Length: 114
Image 1: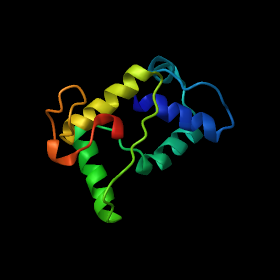
Image 2: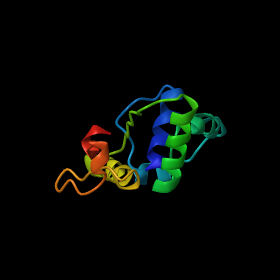
Image 3: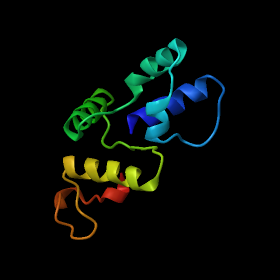
Image 4: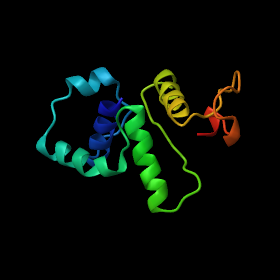
């Protein structure tokens, strides 16, 4: 999923617009040196990796800013992958499952509140 976001970021900074690219488009893209530089500079603002890695970075961000809550926005090529991203976050943060309410009862949050 991060590859699509990288390509979208590179396109935005090079004046190209259009729909959010698919993973296949991003994998097939021939990157220029400038596009690679744009993507590398944006990495600090991107939380990508295994769920545990993302959780650690989000928790560190919240601690740095002494935030009580975070708003997460995942942009992907389609709804299925976006929802899967939110499901992974809900699982790693032990948030309650909307269907059963089994996870994270103490938080009172649901995956849709991400």
